[in-house]
Length: 303
Image: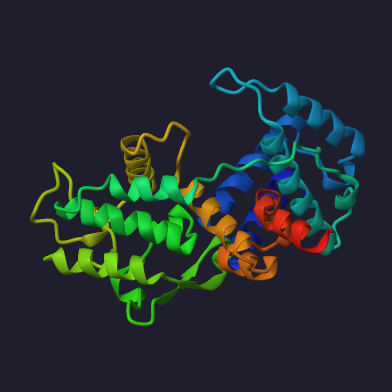
């Protein structure tokens, strides 16, 4: 059996057995088909050698995309991760091929993240015009992002009946469709409640588009659901109005949420669960930002 059929079977395995998201399957398909195109022939998996993989790595490192730019190290690693997962699938199904563990990922520079201070955050909140309905919505969005550490995709998917404002908690399914409990601050819950009471519709989405060009006779709430780009624009808008020069995104608020938890004494395992990270290694990127806490420990115990 040639590699094309094996790739097709692997993608179906991800869809049915592993229940991976459509986006994940699309990415794996893209990465694996690039590998197949690099081979230039319908190769039998048993002929995939470490030398061929190394040549593929050189190809990726020198590849120029449509935008005239090379592929970054992180994206190159995504190609290799997809290839390793494919080889692991073949091995599991007793199909002779290169051992997946022989493929090492490239070392990438230590990830740095941007956070904003509490003072900057308060300036962003203060920049919202609460006299307008859209302002109440935007403030509810900003406070929810900071209060929960939600990914922007998780925020946009929220429905009204899913969020318990009395208990100030709800469940989301994050990456890999893994469920986790989200807790709202009292402030964020009050802002959401205020915003909801201003609405005169029965649409399911928690946050909807109320801008110009929206037809009042739209009955499908999904057409009014705010998109990822809309949320990003809202965050950027108020950061700019607050006079903050650094780039501020929904993920910046997520980073700030996690950092604040750690600085105030939360243990890293709890933060990992609240962020929905599958690996604690991902959560550990925040630890170098908690120097304030480390200094307090140093001052307390080093005399």
